[in-house]
Length: 294
Image 1 (tube, rainbow, N blue to C red):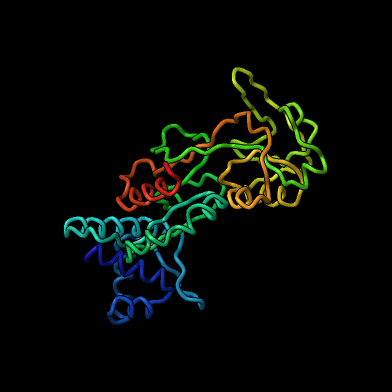
Image 2 (cartoon, rainbow, N blue to C red):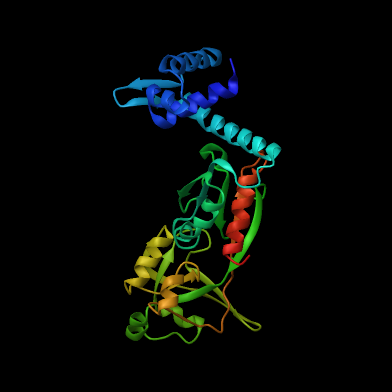
């Protein structure tokens, strides 16, 4: 059995949801697809696919095999392209993860030139503010913000952004403009319940440091929630300029205490441990770094 061809057949069956659709895509007969899958299951000693009224569904073992086979096939395609000197573009799937708001504002809208340059490249973006398990989720590269919790990860810092104290003009008109970080303690803060957030906001001006311990009736676990709360005049927030880029440009939100400096926020490209970084992932990271001016 040609193991790589069997992997390709299995991947097509999973992604199309039926043997007939896979056969059409591979330009072979349906019996050939069924025979290949059966031989693959026999060689592995486990069931990979369940046949239901809705089509084909991978078993737990099948899903694990699919993720590994998908990566193997992508790497094989990259190897073929490298040997052929195919500098015109990459092929296959690039699976990335990134924080929802950051990617929606600063990455996804600008993928057009990258996709045009590599017409056979498919990009799958997993949007999640959590730090997902890259190996378990089959992620090629993750864009993460803030301090990396695991120092053993293979990572590259690609940009650094400024944090600001942000709210709407209407909020400041109602509650007043803070003139010193201690004034923040009398305001309603929208508190971001993730790493880099919390209710302690350290600030520095020249040789003076001050950590404001803020209070607020609203805590949220995703950046989009911070954006929604601030825009609804529910409070002020400590946030990166990236998070509110459109609103800062339009004047919908404004910054205060601009002569004070808050800890910057870093953007990292994180790669799965124990796996060689794919050329596609490196090209993507270089592209994003250029977008961010990194």
